[in-house]
Length: 180
Image (tube, rainbow, N blue to C red; front, side):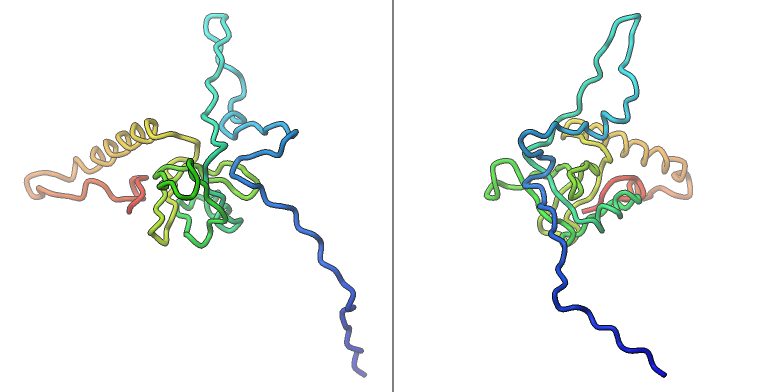
């Protein structure tokens, strides 16, 4: 004897979806802003000689940034450093869509949680390349770039000698420097 085949009722409905945020890191009016992930990691403010020294707040990115889909957000949280153009849900630049895109932008998931700062290339299939897991601006990125380049050169310095007079000084993601 065979079991009767179960059929789906025709009057089933799907649950409504929650609206997506209008802009990266933006909060609807009336909702208090959530603390930045960088601020959440700071357990206690710095105290120097009995005086309270306030911790400098990270720069706020309310007007620009990239929102990536869940798949890309999960990859970034697991240590991946690339985001493909097809995984970007939305991207906003200062000055509107007609403005030229900046090269350094914050990256967030669909909930608005910061995932890092990335270099952006509108012409590449790999549109975002993560350079920091925190929010940084151009001066901090240039300092970080210098530090990473010096470390890469120092790692390869012992390879040079009488037998070898050349080597690759920097090797993109292996030296934490995104390749273009």
